[in-house]
Length: 194
Image (tube, rainbow, N blue to C red; front, side):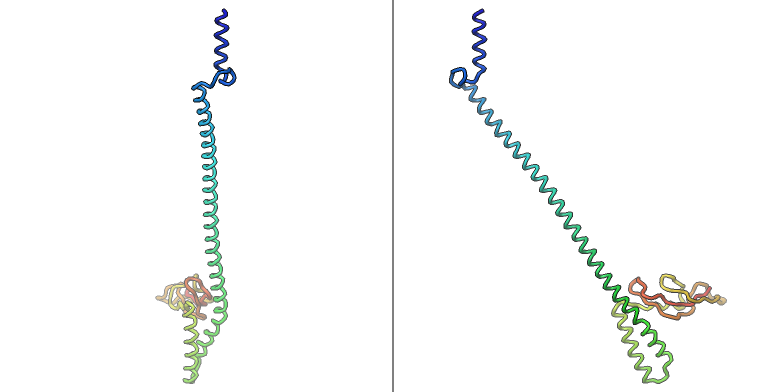
């Protein structure tokens, strides 16, 4: 029985670190210390890798946000530029709309003029007026003998269609219309057959 107690005590002593049981550190215990150091280094490395991965994810998130902000700003700049361009063109159209009656009056004066010198002068002024409109990209809408199109014309009178004439055609133009591209500045005022 003594032997069993003694053997149990020896086993307990071998479980204690070498310094505590009074023996110098054995080779196995030195290997354990090395493993602990390696384990600590591995833990540090893993911690750094996790931090690095988190930093990379955060950098990717910031880059994504930056790219979205840059795209939004570019879209804003384009919208703003288009809005300014439209405002400028609308302002020009308003001014041109106010001078269109001048051209109408010049055409009326030319039609009723009998003096040749006066007629030539009116023609010159009318040509310069038409050149101004042409330079601004403005076209006249003169739909005489064409099918009535409410997108460009305003019917202010109607008359019954004669025999052989189809209804819905422009019979007479009272006031020419004007457009820039597909945008109507002034609708043509016309008489339509019914």
